[in-house]
Image 1: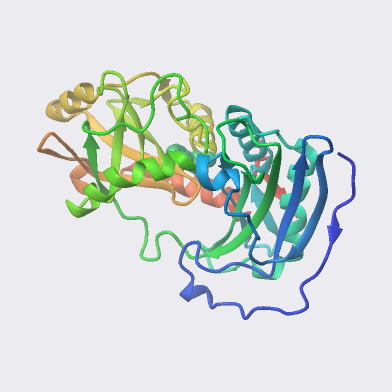
Image 2 (image 1 turned 120 degrees about the vertical axis):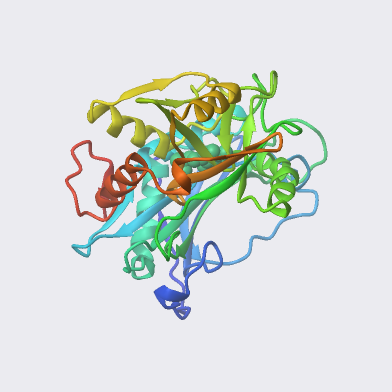
Length: 355
Ligand SMILES: *Cc1c(COP(=O)(O)O)cnc(C)c1O
């Protein structure tokens, strides 16, 4: 699609919150990006509009059968005042992969990238500047055809909304307690675990609610077949350091191919560390803990970047990791990625796109 992006500016401006008052995903900017799809036309009418409600027929397919995908990335205001998107091309590629898995027509990659750049540019004053804050970008595609029936819809809406978000760790990075669940599963081989599709999150709520009631921050999912191998934690990928080997589950379709996971692996390989993408069983983790070789555990994801795990609970047994403190590699990874995001360190691999 080569259609130019139409711009309909908002006639009013919302008041901007103070950086210190920012939470996550509660406040939205003045504009949004929208494009439509119809079978006969393909994707058409890409535009920027004032932020506002979508009007949907109650029969709209997405409301019933959850044919929807999304992605999530961030724009940062650097120490040099420039605004950088972190690996937007990789997020576009993943959104299109998620779309194909849900029978949603993918977007032209250039248009999708432009949609992110243009809408952030128009609302660039909304990118907060305090260290740790950012502008969260949420591209989403939903089936918009009003019909009841289980088949791919014939029309879709793509939109991008923006939300200024506060520092994930306002008081500094803090280790979390995670419950390893074997009663529920998130994904199975051949399923949709590898797609960022809405239904996965609805399906995860029950287990994470239970974990929260028991005092844990999140759940660690085991594989859906043996309930034995680590999959991922909440909405983050998981990494464990046993001895001098850093292990993370391979991308076999049951876990989300995280962009932070990919960035983290690239950095550790560059640093010459021993990195393995292989299955790791909870028994191996328990055993390593018993031997004293379970050095560090952390999650990776756009929201937190790196989330240190201070404790894992499995079948009533609690394993404290690194005395509940942030491990040196966990800290090093966090610092390295954040430095690139805020323009404090060189970006040799071109991960950021300055706008
Ligand atoms: C989004 C997400 C991740 C992390 O991906 P990033 O690209 O690093 O943000 C991991 N797991 C799940 C289930 C997710 O939804």
